[in-house]
Image (tube, rainbow, N blue to C red):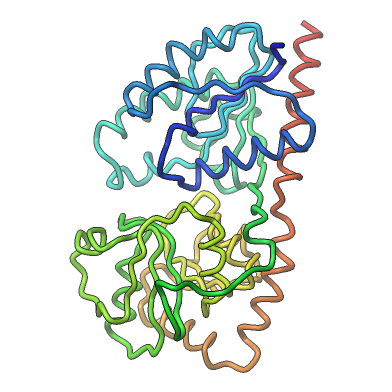
Length: 347
C-alpha cells in the first residue's frame, strides 16, 4: 500500500558512509521508530551520473501521488509536481565557500542545482543555526522556509563499550576525523606534531597513506597513524573512548558530527574557533584559532597536564550532547510533515 511519505534514499547506493549518509540513515530509522510510515525510492546504480539523472528524471515521477517527498542528503529534484510537498535537508554550502575542495564539475553542478532545489522546496532543514544563516545569505529565496533541526548521536556512541583499537595498540593518542582537504586543516595538526615534542600519537580517521602523501606536509610516520575511512561506527566509538581528545581544526563546518559523537564517548574536544563550533560545543570544548600552531600545542598541553581539565571537559561534553537526539530530530520532522499535510488539505 502506498504511504503518504516518500524518502529519497539514493544514499543507500554509496559504499562509503560519510556524515551525510549517516544523517540520512539515522533520521530515516528514527522516523520509523516514531511510527512514521514511509516508502523509500532508490536508484539501481551507484554511478554518480546515473544517480543524478535518476534523481532529476525518475524520482519526480515516483513521487507523484505522495503528499511529501523528503530528500535528506543535500540534493533534490526541482521539477516535482506542486501537489507534492518537498522537505530538503541542506547540510552545508562548502561547495560555495570553499570550491577548492571539489572537482570543478561538482561545483558547477551544485551551483546550478542548489538554487533550483531551494526554490522548489517547501521546507528546508538546516543542521545548525549557523548554516541556516549562511543559506539565507546566499539564497534569499530560502527565507521563511528554513527549520533548524540538529542531527542526533547514534547509539554506538552513547552506549558503553570497549576503548581503543588493535590497529592503534597501547599508548596515548589524539584523534582527527576528516579528509586531506584544505578546509579540514589537517596540515596544522601535522605541523604541531612536527614542531613540538608530543609523547602521544595522532590517529587519523578518514585519511589514509595516500591522503597524507597528497598534503606534502612533513610528519613523523612513527607518531601518525592513518587508518583511512571506517564505516564501522562501533569501532570509531571505541577509538574515541580510548583517546586523550578529539582535535577538530576545520576552517568550515555545518555541524561537525564527530565532535558531538566524541563528547558522547567522554572524549574531550579541542576545536577551531568558528561560529558553528561555538554553537554546537558551547562550554564543553576548548577553542583555538584554526591556524594557530602554538595555540593548538598549548591547548593539548592543558588537557594533558592541567589537573582536572580533561575530567571537566568530559562532564561538560556529556551534558551538552544530550541536546542532540535522533528522537528529537524525528519528532520535529514529523511535525513538519503534519503541517504540510494540513496545508494540502486546506488547499
